[in-house]
Image (cartoon, rainbow, N blue to C red):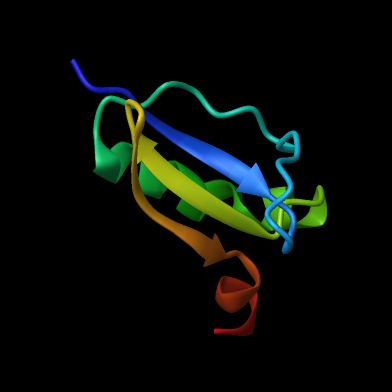
Length: 71
């Protein structure tokens, strides 16, 4: 079964520890729903962008968390 994971980064791509520890997600939708709930805390904790991976394959990213703040 696939595992979906987020990588949390500063704007320059440096990996950072997330302010909210994510679980392991079994679907892309679950991973995206979780991010939708916690992006404000993640941004406040120093993560400025995220990348989504399925197992070892990057699906998309970097995606700015600031874009959500400005929307």
